[in-house]
Every structure is written in C-alpha cells, then in structure tokens.
Length: 366
Ligand SMILES: Nc1ncnc2c1ncn2[C@@H]1O[C@H](COP(=O)(O)OP(=O)(O)OP(=O)(O)O)[C@@H](O)[C@H]1O
Ligand SMILES: [Mg+2]
Image (cartoon, helix red, strand yellow):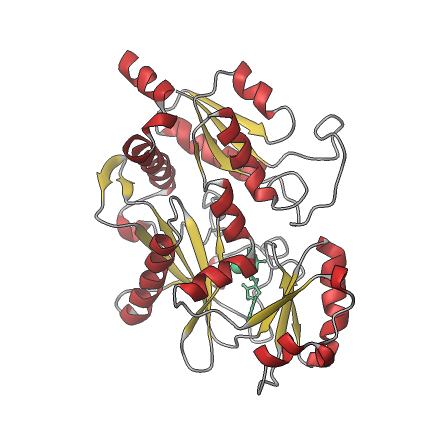
C-alpha cells in the first residue's frame, strides 16, 4: 500500500497557489510531525511512505506515486476554513485518508461552530459572542447580544480567533471596555470572525479520543467504544492566565501532568465521559483532543476540540499532550499511529465500502 503523509504547503513558494490570500488560521507546515508519523508507519511495516505538501501539486503527486491511502497532517495552505481543504481535495480525488471529513474538520476548527454543537448536546462551554469587523467596530456598550450574554458578569473576558492554534492571538481582557481594541487587533491578524467569551479561571485539562480499534505492542484489538486516553493537566505557572503557546515554550514534563487514576479517578471519569459524548454526539470518526477548563463552580467547560492534535513523537523531556498517557494502556507512539490507521481502514471497510474498492483489490492480491 502506497501511503502519503500530507503536511501544510507553503503559499510563498512560486507555483504552490494561483493567487496568495491571507491565512485566516495562523499557518504552520507541520512537516516535522508528518515525518514522525511517516517514520512510525515505516517502523510498523509499511514500505512505501511518501511525505507530501498539500499545495496545487498534490493531485498530480498522488497520481504519479500511485497513492492508495493518505494521512492528513495539515492545517491547509491559506484561505478560509483551510483545515478542510486537504480532506475536501482527497474526497474529490477518491483517496481515503486518516483525518476528519471536510464538514467535521470545519466544525471542529471553528470555535463558535463547535461551541454551538457542544451546547446543543447539553455540554458546558463558556458563554460567548462573535464579531466580524465587516459589521463595523465592536461596541460592547451598544451591543445588545453582548449585554444579554454577559449580563451580571463583570469579570475578565477572553478575545481570540474563531479559528486559531497554539494560543496565538488569545488575549485576556480585564475590563470589558477594552474589548473593542482587542477585537480589532485579532481581526486584523486573522481577517476572520473573533470570539469573545467568559474567562474560566480554574485548572486546565486535555483529553484525547479516537476510534475503538487500537494496537498494543503492534497487536490490533477492537474495543466496544471509542478510546479515550491521555487525560492530562496543563500546569499553569502562577503568573500565567492562559497556557503559553508551544511555539514559544516547548511542552515539557513540568508543564504537563498526566492525571492518575489513583488520585483523581472522578475527574478522569468525567473527562472521558465528556470526550465520549462529544465523539458520539458529533459523529467523530478519528482522533480529536478536547481542551477544557474549570470554572469557579468546579464544573468542566470545553474550550475547544482540536481536529488535528499534535502527533509529535515524544523525545526526552519534550512530550505531546496526546502521547502522555499511552504507557498506561501498554501503547507507544508507533502503536498509536498504527491504531489510527487501522481504525480508519476498519471504519471504511465497515461503513463506506464504496470508497475502498482499490484497497480491496490490493488486499486480495496479497
Ligand atoms: N475562556 C477561556 N478562559 C480561560 N482561558 C482560556 C479561555 N479561552 C482560551 N483560554 C486559554 O488560551 C489557551 C488557548 O485557547 P484555545 O485552546 O481556545 O485556542 P488554541 O489557540 O486553538 O489552542 P491550542 O494551543 O490548544 O491549539 C487555552 O489553552 C487556555 O489556556
Ligand atoms: Mg486549545
């Protein structure tokens, strides 16, 4: 099976796009992580793994290399809802992939859209409004929606991009009268909707969830439900109100604490329960990482759901949120990569047989 691991193309390289447009989601190539994933695929036995950018050449490259299957590790090259461009192209080409479909990717990567879905499932998320400067400057004192949503609340607000990553352009605003200028700043950085929400002052957590097929020591097994794992606390320093971007400070063991079932079983159970509700409620079909924060009342509120959580291979002190808890399930990084691939192939063969005739032919030839 010829596999392509796809990372974000660079719009500045001539020929990669027809016209350059702004990046509504801060751009990153994710190439290094794509190479980590490719390395794991090779170690578990795949002999033909290609690492490719998702630019205008993608279709030709996939055809030239006779790619049967792809792994999306891209946030897109430019434009609106860029995370959905990779899966949309692959749907068009008919190449199956590990990754969320275009609609699910767009919902998860757009914080207001995801929050509305979460609310409709009865899950808690911080009260919010959105603003776009096409509607004029943001004027909280005249904005009825703002007044309704934050009635009786005088605490800090968070202003951040509708679609962001790595805590970039996330601001805490203590006085609501200052929101206007910050909304303008975030809008100018992203050219996209800005979200204004209540600041959650408590502890911060992450939990990962994927499909029911997992590999332990390279042996596949099918669980009875989606697999929630790596419940971790993002440890904030005393002067840190928002978790500093991993672009500025690597996520090391001192900044991340794996929750243990001996000391905090109820908290872990609640995190896993929320993750399962999101996975089933939104019909998710592959790896997602939820970020959550506690409010004053001790309740967990979902900040966001990441459709392409970081899959960097753990090395020394540098760890990734998703991989932190693999050992307690008897898994390592290569097992996780094999799990995600096998789970997707299982799903395609069980639920979308019409999309995998070429894989069926390939397997029959073995
Ligand atoms: N409403 C909020 N209350 C408190 N802190 C918040 C809130 N929204 C965001 N933050 C802080 O900002 C960080 C980044 O926010 P968020 O997770 O929404 O966006 P992101 O940039 O996509 O994050 P990531 O780094 O996980 O990709 C969070 O980890 C959290 O520390
Ligand atoms: Mg986050």
